[in-house]
Image 1 (tube, rainbow, N blue to C red):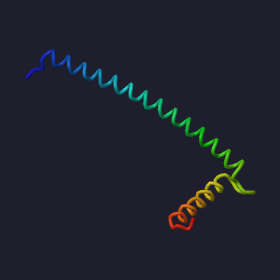
Image 2: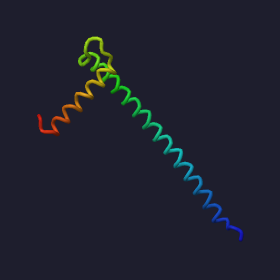
Image 3: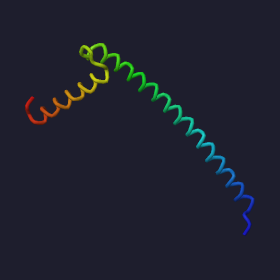
Image 4: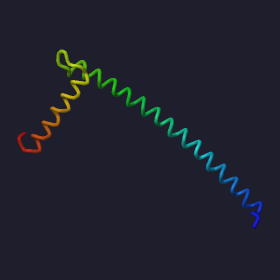
Length: 85
């Protein structure tokens, strides 16, 4: 059975709307990802500078200081849960 002109026109419009929506969605998501990457990257730089300036011990790298601080935090939380603090 042949499709009517109305059905064909409706399908063409639907395809155009879906395509347009996908383009808008890609633009919005891409823009959000760029903003997020910039914000997270900026925060990481600031956090690394803070750790380097205030929390590293002599001869310790920023990464080593972060690992040490994370281990100390876990130890404090374990003590707190055990009721020692």
